[in-house]
Length: 67
Image (tube, rainbow, N blue to C red; front, side):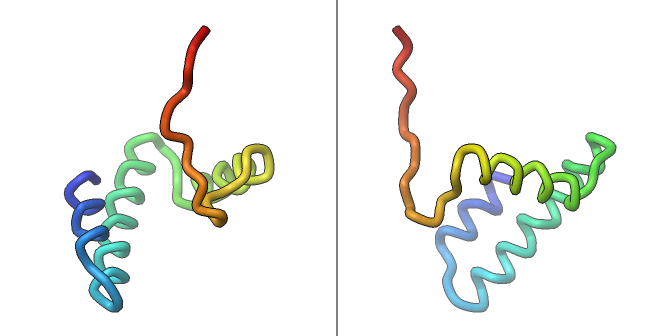
């Protein structure tokens, strides 16, 4: 996954779409290892989005401070 992630970051345009497709294949395989599917991952992602928001505003959590 990390290798595919790096390739996504270094590409653009149609090449980036192809690299994202490779990443998707990795995700499909990892889901299968967990006896799951991409549809289930998508459902969980939508649930998390409704509770915690998404990345549409490009705001990312960098660190959590513990008391």
